Length: 98
Image (cartoon, rainbow, N blue to C red; front, side, top):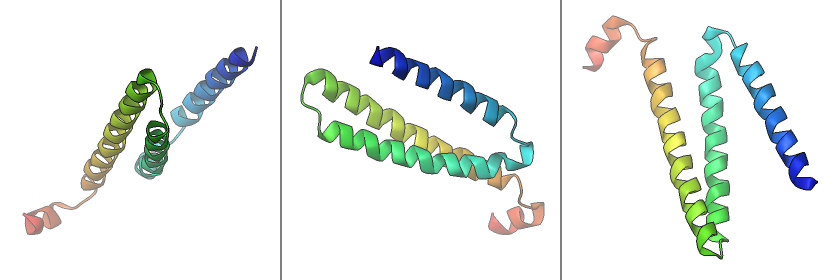
């Protein structure tokens, strides 16, 4: 019974998240990406904590995968944010930086 409750909460959260994100104006995508990078950092810390407290081999494997994927997600988010912010620089500034 408890498992069905968790599944229901997960599906509800996924639906609400999709509806909220799909209605974000284009101008707000860069600040939203920066905010989501913070959340990815929190997920990464949580996955490291879970890996540190793993006892069985399956927990170790799942914890390692969680840390690996969380780190890749956080790093990729920062790279995408940097590229998006680079689109707002002027051409004169790009010539000076080069």
